[in-house]
Amino acid sequence: MKRSLQLLALAPLLGCTDLLIKALGIGLCGLLVLLLCGLLLAPLRSRLHGNGLVLAALLIGGILASIATLALQLFSAELAGALELFLPLLILPCLVLALDDQHTALAGLRPGLIFALVATLLGGLRELLGHGSLFAHADRLLGPAASGWYWSSGIPLLTHAAGAFILFGLLLALLRHFNQDDAR
Amino acid sequence: MKRAAPLLLLIVLLGAGLLAILQHVAAPRIEQQRQTAAERTLLDLLPAGGYDNRPLQNPIALPAGGLLGNPGAEPGYLARLNGRPSAVLLPVSARGYEGPIRLLVAITADGRLLASKVLQQQETPGLADLLAPERAHWLGGFTDKTLEANLKLRADGGQIDQIAGATVTSRAVTDALQRALRFFDAERERLLGAQP
Image (cartoon, rainbow over all chains, first blue to last red):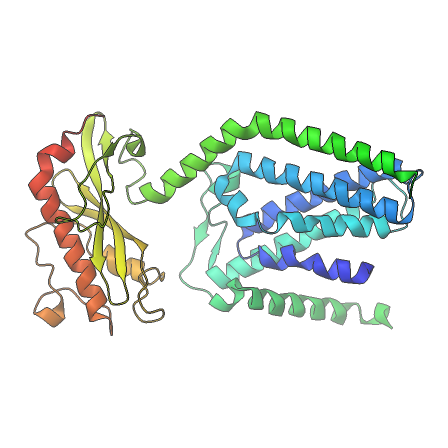
């Protein structure tokens, strides 16, 4: 259950990281949603158990994701439109939080940070190699003064979801290679 | 589970209330953001410092059919800089190979083509797809052309390179650009005189 939920949480991570600015947007949203969800779940843990806690996490995650959608729309309609499809999926890592046995208030901090970091890394790599630019459309989040850097060409495959899977797989393989001793 | 119900209900009510309030507070700002985004997609034809009015607020009514060939009455827009007209945005339709092509053409006040972009098309993907990134360069090649310029394709004995393997599409686009320039020439006074 937990494992498949974590796998499903990959969808926003791979689906909207073809531009660094989109990756930053979803990463920030994920960090805030997870952090707040962890904070709000902590006082409920003494009163709710099992399914009740999961249901509470579902509700809180939904509310937080809706707030994140609203907040993004305040900043930029374009960015909100690009991320719209994937924001509700941020509920999934919240469910993982509820299934976890960690009882601290900051339980959401570590997964949130990992989510944001991986999103930024994937976004940066995919934009750099796929589009051949960096911080394109940055004005959507950082104000009109921000403009990206552009090169001539990239590998279009990386801008698609399939390229995201390949890149993610390569990153995982790299991680495994360096953590070989731990794995054994 | 039974003991949990009131608590969950409380969460639902609190969350719904909070969202309703936030939505209400944010609605005007969100609507404004949506409008500026819509404006940006239409107005990115004009250079950033090329206008200081809000062209989309004052549409110019244009007739259906005629030189522009639009199936319905679509508005054009007038961009002004320091109170003087700087450019006109005209919608033009053409018959492509696969279906209608809709273009938005920007023409400066002195009748030069400033830029054009394809709003809608169904041309063959991979061959004549006008929305493909590499086509932007081809469309950019028409910048600064005037009505006097020879907008004929090489295939028709002119100077313009057509898109390889897509002569019908290329001809439809050049023809549409030329019609836009002719329309501007014929209606210049009315278009530039539109009240802000």
